[in-house]
Amino acid sequence: LVVENIYDNGAVFAPEILDITDEQLLAKFQLGVSNVAAASLEMGYCTQASVPHSVINGFKNVLAVAVETDISFPIADTVKAFLADPSAFAVAAPVEAAVEETKEEVKEESEEEESDDDMGFSLFD
Image (tube, rainbow, N blue to C red; front, top):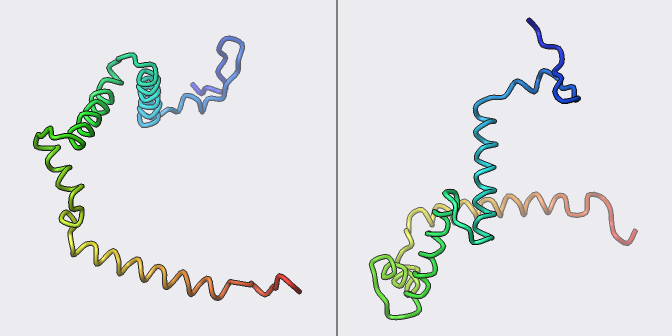
């Protein structure tokens, strides 16, 4: 049996509509859940999808108050230490490698730009 067309409520569809993978179905479901969470957060209405985001947003507010005041708890102490001296949390080795890569990229880009600056045309010819 080969499906040639699909008729549903006055509309005719191609049979390719039936070729839905599990990944496509899951992606659509996740998109719907994220839309529900976003709408619920904006309205201030709690749903299962919006509660984790509400808890994290509340924690961010508590952390902001703790940083500005003398309130102290372990995570707030870590954030306060980072704000006091961000360089203490930097790792030296990966940063140096990243800086060298960035310099090489900039050098390659500048060489390309120099050769293609005017492309044979002048603004005032």
